Image 1 (cartoon, rainbow, N blue to C red):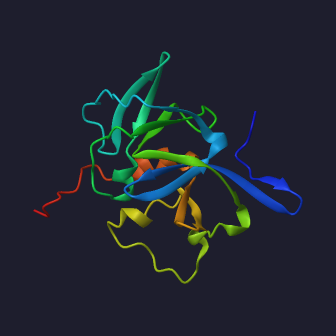
Image 2: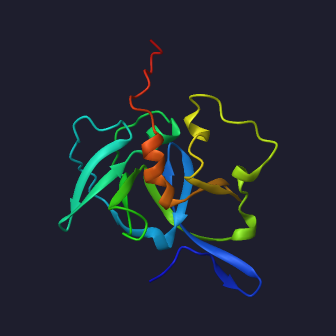
Length: 176
């Protein structure tokens, strides 16, 4: 069985990332945690589920819970498009689950030395109350600068834990 540990070549360590787009941003997860990518995003809604649950999907007889990272990160809601995909994770990560992404990008190989772990910064102020973008520390590994911007590296094993900490209701977009 493969692990999600970085791969070493000599003194340098490398990480293979499956990358995707969400709300105009580039994200990545360890490629070893990804089971498959599914084009059909037809989901079965779950009554009384938290807003961060997009629904359920059955793939070859296996039921997967689909998590909406837009809710977890506090991004604006968008309906799925023709480019949207479901990224399903291996059983070694957690219970059968996946995430809905706006589009897939590529598999990228990055040097682990290039990853900036923002969680360990001592000079960073604590997250403000209600700031969901910084209140899910178990989900983010760090960021890595690329020529075209930053890639946010997520820890797949932290996604369901972030779901448990997600808001119980969707925020009112009108502020009322």
